[in-house]
Amino acid sequence: MARIFPEYGIDFEVLYMAKIEPDRKWIIPSDSYKYAHTFYKGIHPTIGNFYAHFNPGLLLRLLKKDYNIAVVGGMASPTHWLAPFFINGNKKQIMSVESNLHSVERTKGIGAWIKKKLLKKATAYQVTGNPQIEYIKFFNPQASSKTFIYMPNLIDEDVFVHQIKKLKDYKEDLRQKFNVNSETQMWVLPARLIEIKGIIPFINLLEGIENVKLFLLGDGEQSKEIDTIILEKNLPVIKVGFVQQEKVLEYYAAADLFVLPSLKDPSPLSPIEASAAGLPILVSSRIGNLEDVLEENTNGWYYDPIDEIKKGKELVKYISKMERKELQNLGQESYKRYDNRFNTEKCIHEYAKQIKMLFSQ
Image (cartoon, rainbow, N blue to C red):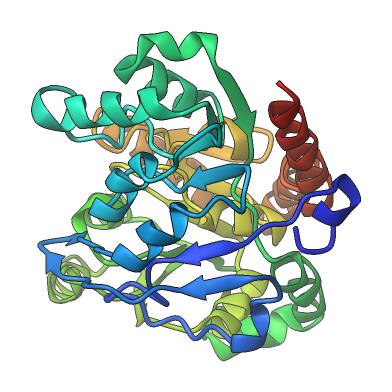
């Protein structure tokens, strides 16, 4: 954006509510922020799994009159809820929405009322795909008359395309490092070990499955329970724990299949990363960007981890009997789909055009 937006006469600034969420362990180099930005201080209590950001400084910043369009990044905290009411005058508000009707918990009552109120305030909506449009229209049917701006979640192509291509030159060495022989399929599942990621129901599908090793990359509250299940059922699962990005790249470069069996997931980045890395994918039908990342039987498969357990079991058996070369061919289709739908250069140019069009209305 910092490079492309000036071509369209657009300047931008990013207002952050915090440097990182409490349960994340990412290391983000300071020199990666190559654009105007501010980290706002505030109060950040954790209430259950809810991060209640209160950032009065950010809200006061929105009262200034030195901008034309404000993009509010969802409805996930008190600061998000209040932000639309601090954007005054003739400024246009874009509400960015990644949720879908599978991922939402409250469709009635006060929660639904707040969503409708906030969605009504928006001039336009920024969405990652059709499930987000359905979500918005469910809570605010009048939204049909407003503008929808398409902006998929984007990733760092230097990392998940170029660096992984280099690592693939050492694919078999990496597999030996991870103790996976050339005849065994290597599956990778990068996710927090929490209930909504659907990890325990999925690993149970692997009971009795041969020719596969699944690597779990992440930690979380279900860690000990997962250890017990793996041991009791003798599952072909290796629980690695949390790893930094550079290590994740090695697993992607060595793997034959990416897995994400989430029970709900608004618009996850990991299947996009896996597609960029040239991996076939086995994913939950409940992820919000399913239709963007997957064409079934072309670059992977999907099933409903709640209502289609039998289909999930059948898919696991079917995939485990495939040749690694077959999976590699499907992975090439994943990359083609990635380049068509998520190529950063193409997407940012298209996004800038949509912003300019909104401003001219």
